[in-house]
Image (tube, rainbow, N blue to C red; front, side):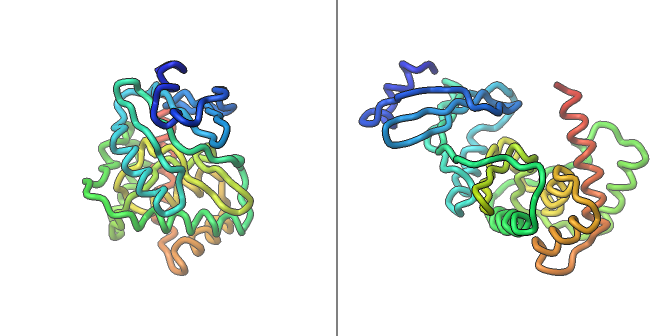
Length: 233
């Protein structure tokens, strides 16, 4: 879909496009553009990663947006291979203060309340390299109860947009049912939380008691999945 085709969309019928510019930070799965009109700003996401269920992504982001933790998706065109959502102003952070940890924990709590009828991911089958450390991590995970919820599954700093102490979750390509501990572990791993920071974040999220050995095991699995994902590209 080019600019001429965009301008014919009902979204821009009475609100013509003034400019289209690439977003400074591009993702691995989409080309991202900022669309400016006289009254609104939109994000135009042109798909470049194959094998992603974009209808599911659109639906799950709608549910998250209804809870105020994600941009509202406005249009999905599978034929043109693109999606248009609200544009969220803010910044990406590599370090989190205590107040921001609390905010992110609350956002995850909201995300994890979303009800969906989907089978859970089988992480054991998704991991390709099963060396001893991986097997030990899965043994720890299997020794604890499963707590399956809708997870984001890709909580790297580029998928979190901050406005002061409030965060917005973006890029729901890999959202699926998983153990809540996976998302918690992903945050701990992506932000490089040391023991004390991990304890604080987990207490904020779980409102008290949690299983630290399970968090650590999921950090191992998350690291491995990230390693294999980037090696595949």
